[in-house]
Image 1 (cartoon, chains in turn purple, cyan, orange):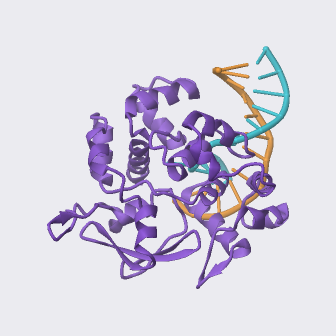
Image 2 (image 1 turned 90 degrees about the vertical axis):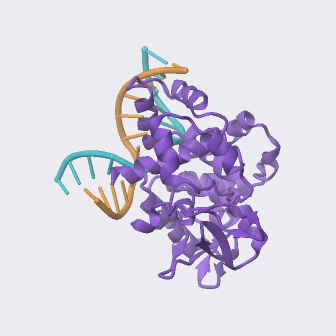
Image 3 (image 1 turned 135 degrees about the vertical axis):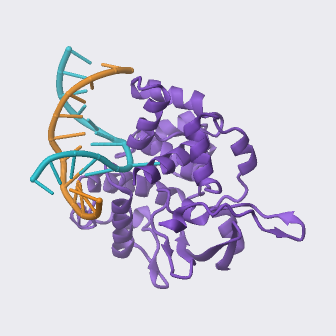
Length: 283
DNA sequence: CTCCAGGTGAGTC
DNA sequence: GACTCACATGGA
């Protein structure tokens, strides 16, 4: 898919000021979010929460064709300091190659519940399957917005039964999503208030939810709580880290510590680039 | 057909 | 703490 590759376009200049760079296809097709559609003319259409957005990449920058500009800028995290992040990138060959392949890929600032719920359904599933489950859940339980559906609120899923969640293809994940939805609907946990917690404490709270282990918690920390040093270690990143260590194995905890040391202050960003590079070069 | 996927949780030592 | 295993589904 050629449009997935980075076009190496320089960010556009307007009135002498450099606009923030973004590689839209990489950003929307790197396993962070799963519900965006690309039209034949290159227009990307999707929802941010229940706000419709249509965006396009022009000259390596973002152009908003429909929807509030501020929502788009926040969602696509145009304020993330890409220059500083690239400065801090590790210098080993794999990381350098990942950077060259993925330059402009941004870590999206996702709605918290949507991110948490989606990654609860992600365990032992391929990216295409996660998308299919996500779209099915939206269609069955979400509110219609134009010709699309918002991700269902926790309350909407909490009143569902496990069988209808399984109809969306969730398998054994249905029980976890249902249990977590009910816990949030009961009001004992407020995902927004949790943003005040330091990362380790927030990770502990998240892993207390059904279907949320360390990996999913780190996805939520990185994609929904702006903890850019959080490193989700899935099967792909696991292999990358093993290769970086020269094949030496280790326990999950050891590997996590190694990743933090090796990938630097923006380890989450580096991880996302390595993840996408590994998946691209596997094809 | 077999293999694998952005893992988690329970049981066991 | 670390190790093992079952758990559903669908695409390659």
